[in-house]
Length: 188
Image 1 (cartoon, rainbow, N blue to C red):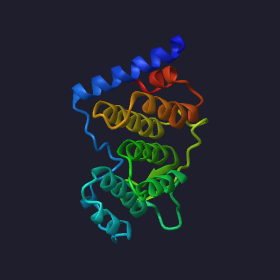
Image 2 (cartoon, rainbow, N blue to C red):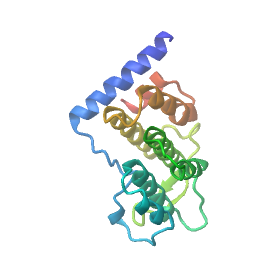
Image 3 (cartoon, rainbow, N blue to C red):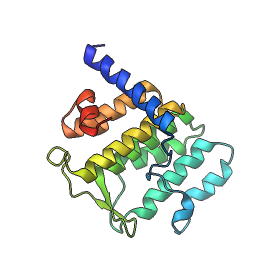
Image 4 (tube, one colour):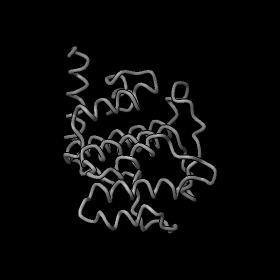
């Protein structure tokens, strides 16, 4: 590990600790409660009922159902949606894998879609992260999903290594930064 990697790992742990102490809400707007919107139940809910004993399966289906319900007609989910769907339909879904794939999908949602505040409908983003990294709305979404990942780390839903890899590739890398630069940029 280089000194920069150690600094970034230390900052992830410090950010997670601070967020935990501040009582950061675990919902953070990315996985709204299913009761906040009405929509048709998809066929995935049938499988969810048969997997009632696995909370990770339920969380994965809620995440996927909410994303599908909120996508504007004609807008497709990212490939991470399909990865999560495949993993949840596995014969023995692994909770650690599902939680990581849920977080990956959340990162993609933050980076690839804009949400209409009045309707909740998601459309492809108008922002180019490399060019628009200073746009307050994009920075807020990146910070929100980063904080959510730290909360998942504190809750034991993600490992430090998984969070670090996701933040570096799915957030920092998209704006041309390393982890320490992203922390400074987002004021973490």
